[in-house]
Amino acid sequence: MDIALYVPYEPADTCYHGDTSTTVGVGEISEKSQRLLKAAKEALKAGIDVCGPLTSYSKIGKAIEAVAHKYGMQVVKDLCGHGVGKDYHQYPIILHYRNEDDGAMAPGTVFTIEPCLVAGVDQHFTSPEDNFSICSLDGGRGAQEEHTVMVTDTGVEVLTQL
Image (spheres, rainbow, N blue to C red):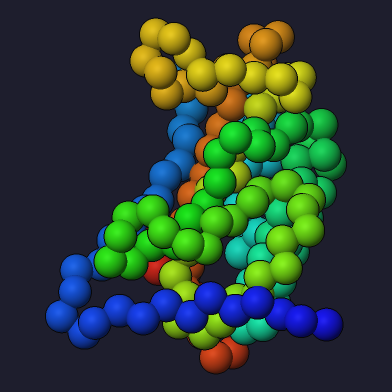
């Protein structure tokens, strides 16, 4: 089996980027919204847990989608994780759903895992009000969780963990 590796090269004197996000409930939130937030956090953890040297990037999407479906949620397929380093958005591209990506993780590679789940139908749109917010066609809410990770020689390190 051929494995494609992306090995980043960064000069020692360069500036590096990071990226992270979370979704929080404000005030009293419904059980349905609490379940969505829990699913998004669990999906992120599942994606991180499969990372390691020479592991296929496709395992991330498989792990995230399995959690989403366990909770009856859908993964927003229009959004993806991405490499970070000298540039804010760079390769590799991290898909958060089942896919056939043949790329594999190399030690030293830094990227985001940022699943966005919706508690609604699979079809969604970007809100015309802010051209950013994701909404499902049936009005279901969305939640996103994100960390920047680095593949090490022995596993993965979460760089944006508090």
